[in-house]
Length: 134
Image (cartoon, rainbow, N blue to C red; front, top):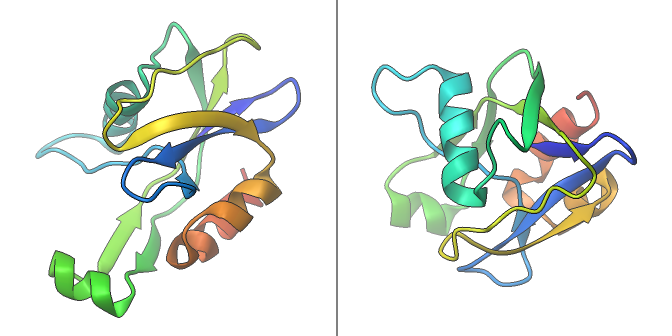
């Protein structure tokens, strides 16, 4: 997640496939890839942001699981996912991402509370856990 340290706002992205739902960038690990390396890669791919825009400041100390609802379990052929969370701080107040146009189509700076209220239901417990501690 990307935070704007000046006012503790988070960079939230609107999903391209479910308009009106927001989330943080995320993605999978490539074979042999370290979690922080994957976080940097996914951040660049999905938002256009890199070390010139943000810097890594913290990591949540464990994996955070979530279970898919029944319809997604069937569609995706798996129970859910586990995430590793990293906190990136914006290098300046005017950081401006470029959503990839597929997964994400828009963005905005939001409060932690707003993001928890506007993330898809099955992800909410993980967001509450991490956003209250990082």
